[in-house]
Length: 306
Ligand SMILES: [Zn+2]
Image 1 (cartoon, rainbow, N blue to C red):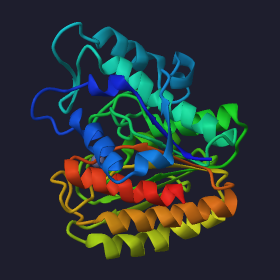
Image 2: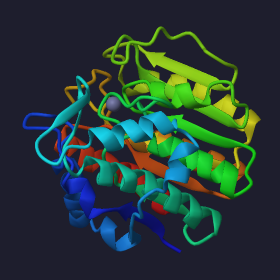
Image 3: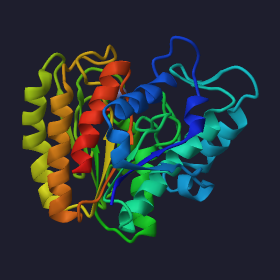
Image 4: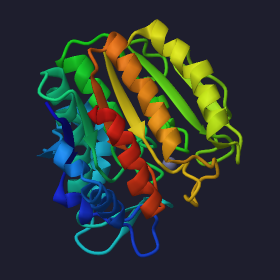
């Protein structure tokens, strides 16, 4: 059985204007690097379906879904927040990015793939229940979590977020819901400018100082995430896999390298084997330095192939 690799052609048509870092070239950089390294031969490719309204309503309000539909332009770009713009293809891409999450959960829960990696954009972890933000429209990883809880009868799902930015949208959706353990590492003082207090007992935060490097991140994850994960014993692990903590990425300043992503993924794989029959769904979030993004996804994916 091969790890599933889920993507969709609509992701290339969503763009937020010239110079925007969350650009279509990101996914091409990932695919090119995986091809070059022979990793595309080691995965089973799938096309993402579009998420249904019902699947999106598990994590978003009807008002937000309706506002996106009403805002969707037939020409040009319109903003939903200062960083987050829609073009005529955005809504389709966002629906397929969330649909990738649904398919990924179905594949790993049915035992048709041990793990799934979703090469998607727009990303999702800043999308809150009632509002998109920070390049995100639908919270893809949360759609995966909600689908696993409601359709596959799970009672404990872990959502792990190692993007350089805190996943405030995921926190908005899951804080206080004891069926979900949300662990987030992020650069302190960076967008979305969170104050680092723990909002609920099911949220584990590992804020990291700027320029702190991969060694400190590993120590923080080992100290904060891993014991909480072992206690929680998730039946499925969903990853908000952002690669913008890489030292070459200008949107963050944590100084991680590919080996750090490999290490974090190894820890997640070990926990998944211990409590979740190995089941992992990984959703691409950030990562804006194109070469570093391709290399980092490869390092992450290699650990998911075993
Ligand atoms: Zn990010």
